[in-house]
Amino acid sequence: MVIRTKRSNVLTTTVFLVFFFTSCTSLCADQSQKSTVEKLLDILQQKGIITEEQHGDLTEELGEEEKEQEEQQQVVQEIKTKEEKRPKVGYKNGFYLETPEKDFKLKVGGRAYGDFRAYNSDHPSNDEFYISRARIYLSGTIYKYFDFKVQADFGKGDSKLKDGFVKLTYFPSAQIMAGQFKAPFSLEKMTSSKYFTFIERSLPADNLPPDRDVGVMLHGVYMPMGLYYAAGIFNGARSNESDADDHKDFVGRLAMTPFTERGPSFLKGLHLGFSTSYGEQDVAYPDDEDSIWNKGELKTAGDTEFFQLNDGVVHDGKRTRLGTELAWVMGPVTLQGEWMRVDLDDMENFRGDRHDLSMKGYYLALSYFITGEEQNYGVSRAAFKRPKIKRVFDPARGQWGAFQLCIRYDRLEVSDGFFDHGYVNERAYTDRASGVTVGVNWYFNDMVRFMFNYNHVDFDDYVQDADGDWEDAFLARFQLDF
Image (cartoon, rainbow, N blue to C red; front, side):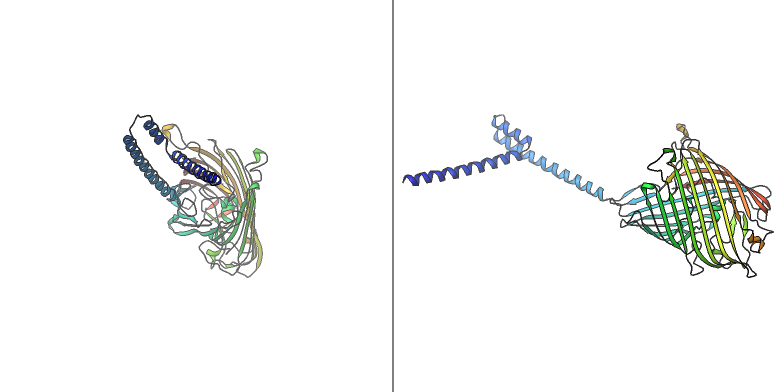
């Protein structure tokens, strides 16, 4: 009996302890889950300040308030979630619409140039106002890694496609483009007209490099050295034109700003570059005029033609281009220059004689922002971008924008053989043109500017379109781009 009683007492004690600790744990848990206000109500009831009925009423009201707060928080969270999922709309070098993850994006932009051109009194061409460019474009991103752009131009009373391409951007240092776009050649050619210093490009940059063409290109950037490369295969013809033969052109460009991230600070803005192109040609003038890269002619900034191939000229051979680039941004001062050459092998005149001929030229330009701005260089394309204006036009606040002065010397010449062997009419055209351009640019803000250029060109011989051996052209432009 004694043994059974002891066992019974031990069992009873164990059960009691388990029940006690379980109850305490549950009570502590209940207490820990109570809010500060609920605990305060419990204390007030225990001290007899409020009755049990009042405690119950207040606890019930408190629960309803907490429920309302939870519902309000839930609504706020739902609104926040919807806002996070809603596409973003804004402006950054164009109006854009994009998803929060930026996997899909649509951008709209354009430009309009209102130009005026006047000549010296003896020049046969008319002084005129005209719209040199009126462009609108759509660009964007699809599924994060695919970019596109479509751009049309309605300037000079005509409409045509300028750009139309798609680009795979999965590998930032090795992007692939396909479609119609600028072939990678020359710093001045690759810089958009929205951003370069003069109204028109220099004599060699406007006449010798390839322009927009249809093809495929691989390009990328190695940032530690500011190294840009591009290599592509193109038709070797003009934009919006079908290829006149089965041959294709290789075009490549290599450029770098080696001191962007390291080295002496005064060399930070130094740019060096090299371009080349190679291809076989089988074209005739004027039958394939629109397929020849320069339509078989050379022109000045004033649009005066000083060189044109004779009818019956055939090019059935190699076409090779070489180009070198140098630019140096030193605060508000920018020095820029290029040299380039085009070799045309196996040119054939109307008599069937064949000759190797060439064209070459160079320019040197200097510009200075008297208001302290500086040229903005973009490593991603190894070309100049939109400058950032410090004080936008706002006369009410005593701000007048930015002012830039510029001067350029350029020269372009062709082989004597063009004239000696009957490829060009020597009575109407010349083998050399050299000029000086001085100008001033007034930037009202980042997207609006007024430009004025005075351009003087000396020709080596009499030029029919200029009615003399020199030309003075006064060029003005009011530019808006967005």
